[in-house]
Image 1 (cartoon, rainbow, N blue to C red):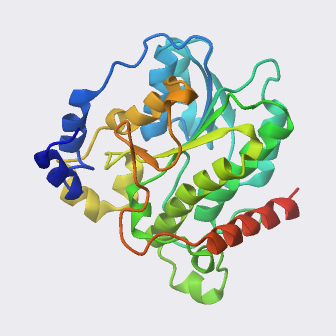
Image 2: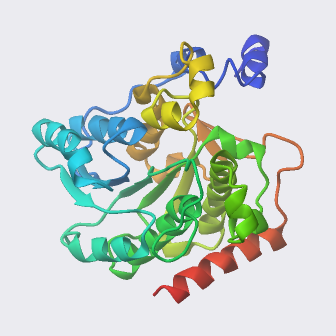
Length: 316
């Protein structure tokens, strides 16, 4: 149970999402099992930052790690490092913003074993407006449409079942937004001219929290879904996308390994030990509606899911 000091520090955000918050919370952490033999984990965006630290930690614990990486050359060093740690490590070149690339993955994956854990980590914060091959804005495509298309394909191919965990690596930035289909699905010329990648990122990270709830409420793809956010971690993505924020907070940022800790914790635990109704942060389930006025209505949630279904049906 938190004391008043912890409550005040956590409420401040600044002293909770930063490294001091992690070190304070970690005092109550239990040790994660050192042997996860038999665990098959698929990780998107696995060659850098939080994705890499997650893949590395699981590989060191004898899990079979399937790295999903967008670029073969840029992921080569990370792949070879993990392969040396654990020869079971596999790599697949997949662009999570491209539905055709995801469809090809389902053909390439081995069919002999089930996937026990899908870690939806791939992310980006575009500096300017861009679309994927299917004409979808890239933030929406990478954070929402790609992950749900991946689940749909894996379920159709019987590679996942009721024992599979789906884990969204979301962001505290999602707390600042309310689900807004008009903002996310806007392809107008005006939006392109005034595009704000940070805003698009935050909207889709809120949408991941909502999508997590939808998957569980509708029992989609048989999986149980979890959502987490890593706090403020020092990654190249943060440095390149938010240079001012990085310069201001770099002395307080978490390491990528600290940012990955809750992902590894969720991957290592039995489903029965984990609740889904909220967002996980530093191994504790938190309220995913931190700010007043950010909770969507059921009608807005249904509209959001209908938009996703329409896109997936249109693109096979």
